[in-house]
Amino acid sequence: MAAGRAAGRAAGLLRGGGAAVVAGAALVAGALLPPGAAPPPDVEVAAATPGPAATAAAAGPEDLLTAPAGNPFVDGWYADPDVLLDDGTYWVFPTTSAPYDDQTVLDAFSSTDLVHWTKHPGVLDLDDVSWGRRALWAPSPVERDGRYYLYFAANDIQSDDEVGGIGVAVADRPEGPYSDALGEPLVDAFHNGAQPIDQDVFVDDDGEAYMYYGGHGHANVVRLGRDMTSVVPFDDGTTYREITPSEDYVEGSQMVKRGDTYYYMWSEGGWTGPDYAVAYATSDSALGPFGEPTRVLQQDPAVARGAGHNGVVNVPGTDTWFLFYHRRPLGETDQNARVLAYDRLTFDADGRMEPVTMRVQDDFSDGNTLGWDTEGGLWAAQRGRLEATAPDGGRAVLDTRFSEVVAEARVRVRSRDGDAGLLVRVTRQGSQVLDGYYAGVSGAGQVFLRSSEGGEWTELASARLRGALARDHRLRVEAVGSSVRVFVGDGTTPVLEVDDDRHRSGATGLRAVGRADLDDVVVAAAPPSTTEVSVYGDCEMGALLDTYGPGDHTAVPDDEISSLRVPEGYRITLFDGPDQTGESLVKTEDDPCLVDDGWNDRTSSFRVEGPAGR
Figure 1 (tube, rainbow, N blue to C red):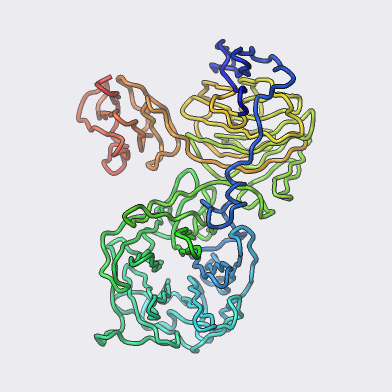
Figure 2: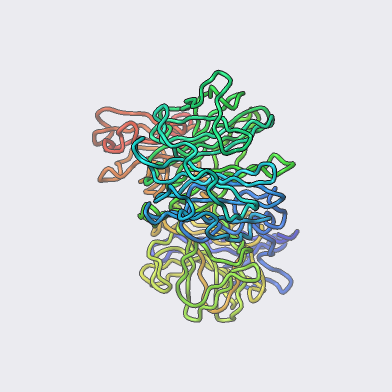
């Protein structure tokens, strides 16, 4: 906020509709205006500033934390992305995610800024591979000596009695068209138990080229000839060297080199399930041996499941890296419903890959609404923002499931009798009949927080907002436990604060009545309360059930608790009998999951203790 201007809390506690409400007010020259009172003519509750997504997009790929215009970054069902950087252009080659018999064409996508993507359909068609018949997948692109090589797997062979394996196609341009270079597979059999699929080709600094591949729990590396279409023996005379890095290895090999360290990456878990994940191990040699495996990407029950099979790209001249991968939207159950995403990959001071965060944001600079489900009125991404025309009200919702959430957006209301803003913890998602919280700005000059249950709206709190109509306002909502707070501008004090427990978890989105522009949407998990233990229905701390302070408590019934968020210095003792009796187990902030111990099915009561036994 500008100097001398701030937002403060009203002194009075209002009650209504089952909620304890603290209504916001403007603090002017040390005087707290009562709720509903108009500020002086030269005072605004909030000043608009560009959101972080807009700032990141303007700075270029080297500063991005994720896809600034939203994930998925391209339209359609795709999986297994690998990346080629060629003369300043990023090329992504994915699998077309479809039933195996329909999986016969490979598309590619190109971008110079990681925001605007051009589709290049049919760069390779199985009709042009004489030995191919089905299951064309996992393309791996490489440029060498001015030619482009696209390695692929086909036919999903299950034994050496079948025709198929890993092939290679060649083209004079990255977009193809590619033609089969050999007329037969490059690798057509199981060696060391490794199914010939999911290859990645890596050219080292000394010019040596290697191909890493394998399924059925085994991984191999082979050495490629200078022609990039032949396999040649290693110096010891062997050809197929097993490098399986972990007993959890499944598929999806990827080799990355940073400095003098080699990072071998792979996918674990079942590709059709939520536990699909990416792990890595390091070595000082491209051929291993590789060290302790570590997971770097896995599902986030609030954002997406089944995250895996990745590619990696480094922005030239920087230490900025991006992990490209596929994931399954939360609302999709079909095994082929997979989309492409990318997020920032970072390293700590010791060179270890840090866990990748699946970030949620959209600045609409790509001119589309991928990932948004819209209903009611017209919603269009154009001129770098989301424009809504919804005379009777409408909504745009992201497929997320946050419990403790912070969401922000830039909001401009263009109708005097309209309003627009953020939806959080939404369950029923109709344009008119929805359940959840709505924090918004009205053209009549208010910032408000409302709750909807079955389309019945209850206003929980409101405050006057000068200059609300046709001006940008940065709106932020923080929902932690039963506390829901609304901020406007850059203020650190909430304009509105409500204690309400009607909506505990759900989707995040936008709502508009009349005409409005919305932009720079960012959604993330909110920091939890530091004075209460939170209990969740998901093992990954999703689906908030309740929060508890120090004392003795009865467990949520029906074995619903699967994980805990325990503040630093606190601990929770679980009991398998009522009233803190029977066998017990102590959990702290370092050990929050109950499923591995079986206590998600055993907990009948528990005790929360704070610092110094409080």
